[in-house]
Figure 1: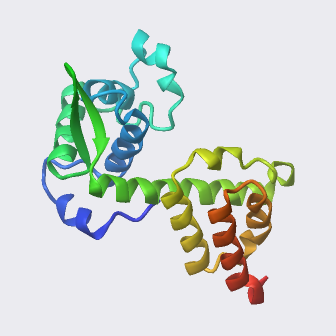
Figure 2: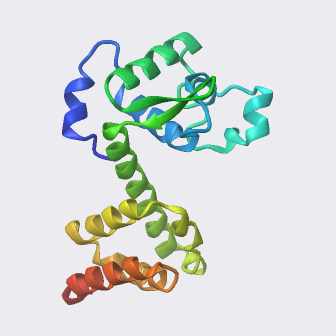
Length: 191
């Protein structure tokens, strides 16, 4: 589970706040809907709604679809409003629509969530060698997240992931390739 930023831990003590797993689901769901949907759509996704709008956008495939299924739409909405007040989510206005964006705390948490998801994927690649060549999805991930991922590999001393990093390097952008090389060099004595 990703580490909740220190700034967020105190905010979670608010009685109207979502639980830690709920907050992770809220931020992860909001990331997908940034500037594409608002609080109502995110509420429907988290509730696991089978509405036509959800189906038309393919949102039932999201990993957080139905994550707050045990809550009413009103309870989910309260948690989303708390996330806005606490700075995890922001509301942006585009014409007559109110769309979601991540606030500073939300972006920090979102990066941590992505890093953990990618690390799990890397671990899976080690277990299934035929999957070692599938890194195209990383090209669509924000470079800050990839840099944080590499920092985590290095700081956690995850030298067993060196084969995955070597394979990924061939698919990565030049700047990320250089970072991978530095991480591999730091892990080298341990590989």
